[in-house]
Amino acid sequence: MHPFPAPADLNFLIGKEIGQVCLDPNSVQILFWNGGRVHIEHDLEHVAENRNRYLYDCTAHMGPPLLLHRLVAKVVTSLDVTPFRLTLNLNDGQKLILHSEEGPYECGQIWSADDPAEGYIIY
Image (cartoon, rainbow, N blue to C red; front, side, top):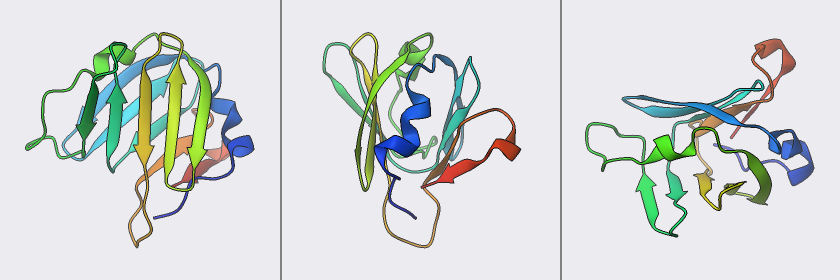
């Protein structure tokens, strides 16, 4: 739906520790122990420690097996941001790459805290 905002607007993600990875038929949610979450409704890419790439389009009934459980207890150490790609670089070398696109539908949301009143980013 929207491009990702400037890196400065996403810096709150740095230092967040992944506490849970939740799956449902049409999305993936990444919940952080220290508050906040990422709700993914579009393509994502998981780059494992060995540099193998795993693509997932949030279509659970048709998708390949996932290894996203390997993200739990990892910390976001840095970000790479382009208009339609956000990469969360983790402390063990893994990467979680979120994709967005122009169009009428949301690709996901990024919440800085657990309280929706704190605000969130739609991408």
